[in-house]
Length: 475
Ligand code: 5AD
Ligand code: SF4
Image 1 (cartoon, rainbow, N blue to C red):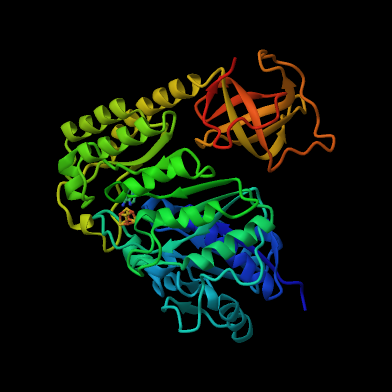
Image 2 (tube, rainbow, N blue to C red):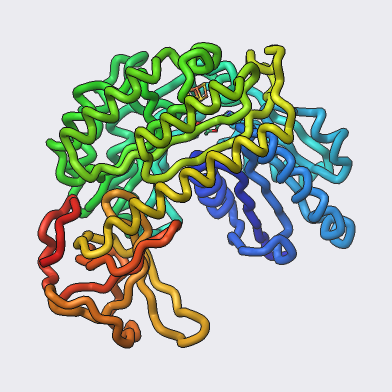
């Protein structure tokens, strides 16, 4: 029998990266080795995202590229899972004639059995059914693979908010939270596997536990903060309407909680926010941001924006640009609105032409680029505590550059060439001669600020001044 090898391709969000890891675990437990290219594999799994139509287009072009491989090796099993699989179901089999298996978001636990059935019966299978009783695709089980300094942990799934542009409630279903004990157990396992930082994932983490009457999100954070060996906690995503005072206070109370919040605003126009069913006004959003900044100077605030939502006039769009100028986010993810199956806005009239959406996106990104760059340059000369995630060698000089993130989630590349606190030099890097900084918290002075990252130099003073890494001016 040939060796069993699986290749897993993830398209889309952090939630999907987490699910792909779980797919990897499940398949390794049933005898598959995970490989990193499709042509080495006899099982190819594409884990998909349906949030915007661009992700869906990516899936179909990827499947197109995989067609010749499948032609050469007809025994290779090709499977599609995740949100698009859930949404499209059997119709994917007709659209992609060489596809063997379509499995939905709640069929994850059944994946090994489904793959066996495809292999044995040479059948094409669709499973987009609900989770069966006794199945629990949320329990971490006995092992955690992946390693990595920074790892994801899903704390809740689904969403009950029904923003009018969004497909999530339809493909991921109602909001359900995992019990805190299970989350803590998983985090401890991840720390044992090398994690120093976890990002807690959910569509709306602020409503964690509400329905099941579990602990509040702030209480969950308190428990996570107590896990030994863990250095940093992040979370995403927060809905502005539910950003509680209790959660804001947690940033001050919990020393491991990073000073960054992703708070998707979506638009700067109250009319559009209303049509999006976001349930807050721009004034409310601005008030929350002001509170966060007043309480925690230097906290990073990032956001998502959709341009060209149906009915968005030029004046609505200008309100969004004005809001961006006023709030000055650290960075932004911006998207052109796209119709999604079942989402209410798909039925809205006054669609914005593609060209106009593209123009608005460019204008917005241009503005934000300037702000991000200014904010990053403003950090020059500050000291930051960086959790090192790994290193790379620059191709030209083969110099070693370490890379990690600040508490505020900014990427910092630096050379481990300790300088005195009062010096900022530009010397040669030292190779990692056994001096592996991965997973360590290193104090770095920022020397340059770019759009995507910062360049720093480590300082001799190794004791960490503040675990939270809130910036302080270098002497
Ligand atoms: N069109 C464009 N962007 C969307 N998003 C969600 N649905 C859509 C859509 N139909 C964006 C939102 C959300 C992010 C994850 O994706 O900005 O916050
Ligand atoms: Fe979608 Fe809104 Fe739920 Fe976010 S809060 S997942 S945008 S419905």
